[in-house]
Length: 224
Image (cartoon, rainbow, N blue to C red; front, side, top):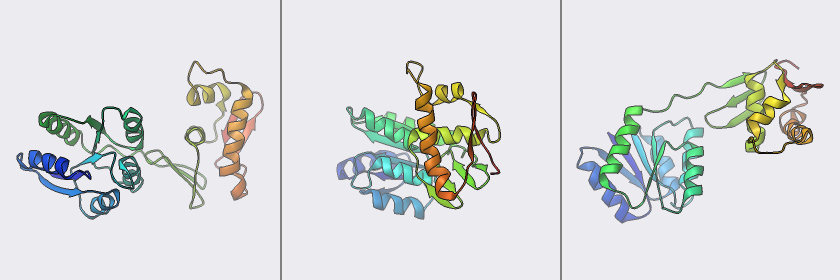
């Protein structure tokens, strides 16, 4: 296998590289996010070992950019014991697994074998409704070829509406998807979220795709 190891600590790079080379793997390494992105774009890798705390862009951003570039190479994050929030961010950004430092060589090898056996994750199909394109893998939205930046909740709402284009999505369904069961969500909060989404996905494009179905919910019209 050819593996890319990304860490700004030369001792860690040497340790990981030696451990993997003893199993016959070819190793490339990078110390910064910029170098990592360049290498990942220049050569095909079977797996990437990526430390979260590398010079800009950090490991989480590297994950996000690779997935946005349709690079689905399995990624194993290296993190510190206290980096719980960073681990969550990394997994949300597209990493496949994580390993907490310090770690045993045997576990590193086992996790990489598992990731490679699993293979690159299947890329979710793009969702289209009219001139709106939603990329579920990269959490990216375009309208008329222009990228639209949404909050996490706005994105989830739009994806839900586009997946059910030309079909009414009820308020209850929206609440169940966007908020946890313990949340006390008023109808007004749903309206505000929909209004903010309209301000980004409809108004700048002179469209009225998101329609209100009085007393029921909302529908995304693929033709408007």
